Amino acid sequence: MQWKKVATSAIATVGILAMLGACGSGAQGVTDTKKDKGLDVIGTNIKYDPNHLVNGGKPITLDYWTWNPEGVDPVYKLSKDYSKIYPNVKINIKKIAWDDYWTKLPLQLKGKNGPAVFNIHNSYDSLVQPYAATYDVDKAQLEADYPSAVAHEDAQGKVKYIDSVINTGNIYYNKDLWKAAGLTDNDIPKTWDQFIEIAKKLTKFQGSKMTQAGFNYNGAYSAIYQGLNYQKGELLFTKDGKKANYDNAVTRENMQFLKDMYEKDKIGSVNFGNDYSQSFGQGQTAMVYAWGWLEGTMKEKYPKINYGVFPTPTFDANKTPFAYDRYNGESTPGINKNQSAQQQKVAQDFVKYLLANDDYVRQAVTGLNSFPAKANIQNDPEILKNPVMASIKDHVNRLIWPGATPATVESSGQTAFEDVMNNGKSISEAVKNGQKTMDKDMKGSSFVSTESKYEFFSEHK
Image (cartoon, rainbow, N blue to C red; front, side, top):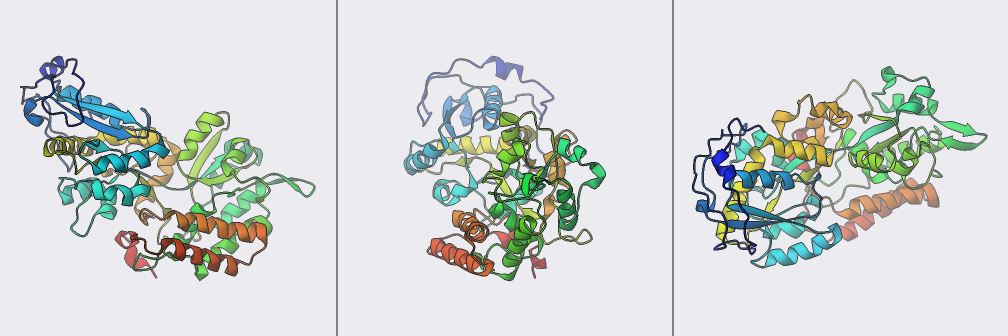
């Protein structure tokens, strides 16, 4: 976002604020008396007019809790920008380690002195939902700006948070190994059959020992099987959304498909360790299926690897699948409904400022290496220079979010696959046992899948 005018008088009044308590009212600090900031209204559908006083111009401090560092969480920068416009508002940011965060946050939100605004991860949806206030934004405007917001709406069409950015799986490939095998950009596979043939060219042996894997999914089964099932039109949960849908013909078929890659096609091996990202980073594997987080791992641990990204193949190049894959989103902040009315009102204004502001999403795209959930910047040339963003763009509308999926769906699925690959169990037995474990773990759960909110759900067989 580029402000076309500069609120010089507002910025000039920024002073040193006194230390304020969580409630923020009555504390000493800067008073803002300039209602007209001389700034333009921002936003495409959700509009934010900065030309008003926040908290009547009286000093107030809001606490914001997050587990992410600056550079990852866009609220760090946007809170500073907000306070430049409204010098009477101070936003204190408290960073807490991930494991401690989910213990301390619920305890604080139960009382009246918890943070007014807090970072959310949708995997902890059930933990924070009881304490989160409903966003005061227009439903139609929200959906127009953020199409994936529909998946977060309750029966009344209200939301407590939405996706700022989304991510999904792609194929990462080693460009140097690709070139050494005589492959070019024209060889990027569109189908799984093509993919397997390419992977064979990227696989090397010394005698009977594999020294280079064409494709390695060790440790990634639970992520990849979900996408394969969706491609064939199989849901991750039953139609009522309350039970896992694991023991079915499509799951068994796709497990056999993945097993054959190693045992029949010989393009990978269970002996290449449990961590496909490490094997890829060490140059021993040519292709892996991974989500956007791998970019950070490669930059930090394996900066010398020259790699590219392309979309995950499908089974039929001439047919659009029910869904290309599952996606997950990084969430916008929650508002503490147990805080004072004064704090909540300012928090609502701040969140609306974030939702209307393209810079908020752009910062999230960069910091979280994820695709913008905001429609008006999904075709942005600068964003699409990133190969992950370019890979996601063409099928972003055909990605499905099943909801804040219970952990057992992934962990039990992974156990089932390991029982087949490492422990000699039949696919039928392993899948049946996986379903039993999922049923047991989800018994009494309030979870309901959001698959039915998917735009193309009616195509489900």
